[in-house]
Image 1 (cartoon, rainbow, N blue to C red):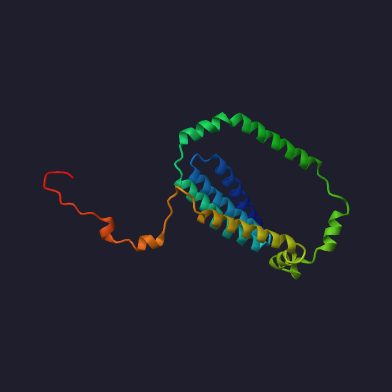
Image 2 (cartoon, rainbow, N blue to C red; image 1 turned 135 degrees about the horizontal axis):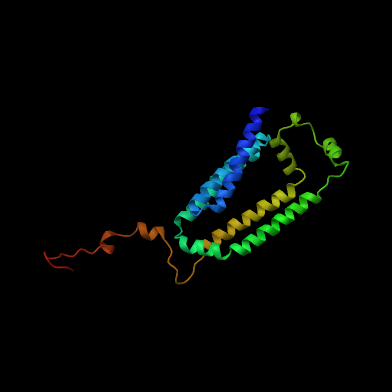
Length: 204
């Protein structure tokens, strides 16, 4: 229990510190790297809670795909850091007011929150013993029984979005250059290269 407690505090402190550094770092590349560190620490917290499936999903999807994509996009952008800092200072009062408002709302919600007297007993009666079922099995049973129609609908929406992106990419538009692999392969050197003899000491 002592090791688990120390691990929890370590992951929690690193996650909070990484989250603060994500929004306070001046370099966007550093912000994305701190975001990856925050995801790893959140995955560690999920492992401590016994939700290893969610931890692996967090690492594989968010760190392996989303955060790396953010990193590539940020590195390819030509960002003017002086302009970025000026914009931050211009919107600092509005952002601070919105942050204080959200903090007041969260404090009000936490202060007014109360649990019903019989809620905990009802949850304990409905939930099976944790040792009898793994969380991955429980999640799969829940998705493919109670939420099977919503799960299939989300799959169809993603399929339609993928087909729409492919159709928009491959549509023919006037005035837009498009790569044609067959024309590139069939191109001959004598049709594209012109050799000129240049005299010594003179340009073309």
